[in-house]
Length: 53
Image (cartoon, rainbow, N blue to C red):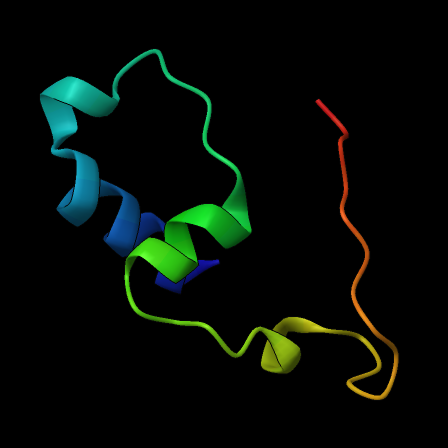
């Protein structure tokens, strides 16, 4: 996700972000994107937490 890559570097700074794990929706929300429906396969289905690591 291009939105995510740019926001991660902007929010954390490249040197502080190295070696860390980030959850996509947390970074997007920190960057001001709160409506995540545009990333859903089906916007009519409520998104569920994903703990895949």
